[in-house]
Image (tube, rainbow, N blue to C red; front, side, top):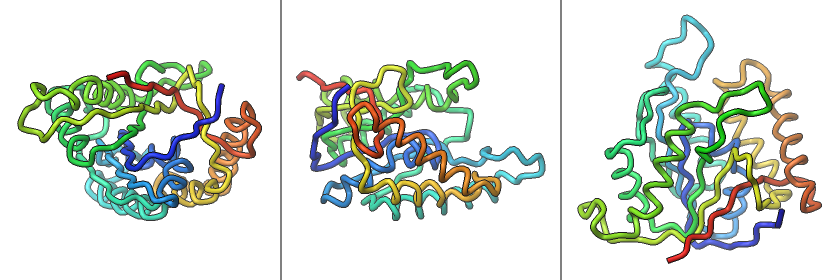
Length: 235
């Protein structure tokens, strides 16, 4: 395990649900934004099924989660947030999604792309990684390597652009840790912006975020960290 030590000019985070980027990488994104990096957030799903309440209304929840997503992005200092408005549970690594992601990558031209590791399915015998996370992860991998960099893939979606590094969260094979000690409070604030998902457990969520970040930071001896699987793309 090694410390992540990069200073990108532009970064793009591609995640499935409105709160995923904040939970997975909010500290790093906030740190980069504070240091002058352009941070662009792409959220594939509308979040309208993100409730355990049987009487929840999808239309109302979609509006609420969209507002929460924008609030959290503002907290992190993101330059843009793009919602692709796919229905929760219906994400597929299809041509349309890949073309959309390629277009966004070519438009914003990030040095680094962050997103979920699609190879991680089972966690500690108690959790199955959401299908939307896995499909989003596969789509972003296919969009980055090699489609966005090669002109004959989706030729109507802008000039080719080569991403230099991938950082995959929610992984079973982390090899880098970002020190997010100076932005951990910002991360917590961004996570708590998704109040519709807290079920009145804000204090418990706050402690969970701090606890996980503390655990992630131990391998590189920092107070708080975020762990990723790093892929440095050869071209």
